[in-house]
Image 1 (tube, rainbow, N blue to C red):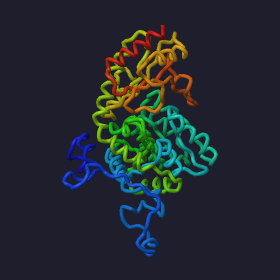
Image 2 (cartoon, rainbow, N blue to C red):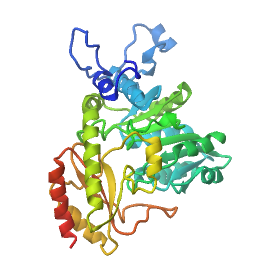
Image 3 (cartoon, rainbow, N blue to C red):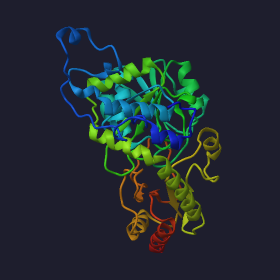
Length: 393
């Protein structure tokens, strides 16, 4: 389906499935397999020459179900190639391992997803890769000053998954590319609302576990690129590491795609309604949501994003403690206490005291929690949040 012919929801309904005039089932089948057979030894020896070049002697290169999801995610993000891996964390590790070696240097935002920081400090550091954590709100001159001759990767995440700082991705990419560094971005919050390759990103990372899956029952990640050269590097890294995704999870992600458009619209609007409402509550110091005019980088959001999702932060007044924030969360009855957002259910998670920061960022005037708004009735969620606010005293 031509990407510029139909609107996003229409494309989601028709991508990665049989043509509607086909005599057969509506949905793509689940292709499971471990052993790949060849018709003769000569074919095995000469190697693949078609779309199934991703196949190896084993099924770790994926099969038809994987390829359809890879095509769909590449289209959603405006890229040319995609590699599906087993988790969102694997989607971070695979390209980092592809582009970094002993003696290299990486820049990573201080607001990065915690397990991504752990890869840098606990794994890559042991391999001889040095990482500098930088203020995510740095400008082009600031990034340029941090770049070294051996900087190979500039990693970005916009907004940060706990404290929601936006990054000026085009400015960062300009500076990085002048020095020949690869720009990677965790685009899980942006999904399709941020088109990474229009803003200078080389490798876009997503946790498909979240809105793509949509039902809190799969683990999956994607690495999308916009050139054959980048795809070959990322794909080789995934194959070498055995970063395989279950075809059953892949099929569930394809199913989740069909309803993602309507789910995302509802959750985005519900999240904004609740965020605006929370801004008016006396117990709340600040709501940290990039789509709100009160967000310090709202102009960046308006420039680069066409929309957002339903994940944001709430900062309570400074007279409250972390224990008060716990009471708020535990007084609610509709908000689960969990980290993996993007499903159909609402979640609340204290963030103050659980973040690792080394560049002096992520400080707010009071204790902070993170809310994810699901598919419940907005009025019911407000009533539930009032119970939490009452528990603050």
